[in-house]
Length: 194
Image (cartoon, rainbow, N blue to C red; front, side):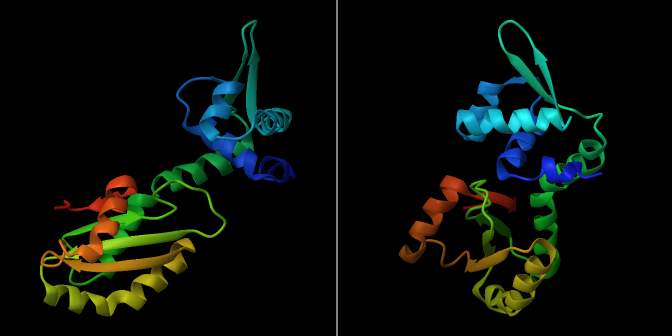
């Protein structure tokens, strides 16, 4: 069985499959194209290949072709769906990891960077900003830096750039750019931001 070779052979296939996985209803080829940001040709070629591999159902009507993920396909049911389910649980898993590894525990943690912007990159990078109740706790927690970086790499194969802040230095001018980025793209892992 070499179906995975066809289904996973191109990044465009993964994008189309991810869009169909998250869709609550059948989608037209144009809607799949709009949601995944691929060219029309790339989207249609991916849909055609995935339909031929039976990973996607195509229901043709007079108005359009409607596409859905073929949940009955063995590779979709046993391989892709569990992978996408795990992908959906990533932020919750990262939240637990930060709370487990960093001591003393930050009062809030927020992630920025390519993954927070939902950009698919070959090499991912996380920027985790952690806010501590005091400067002393921030300095004590900094001892966990190497452990946090290593644990995130081992678990997710992602580079992490931690920012260690405390409630006393949040308003410093040097962090204005960071707060604009947090406001624009931040994913709050836990706590509340000031």
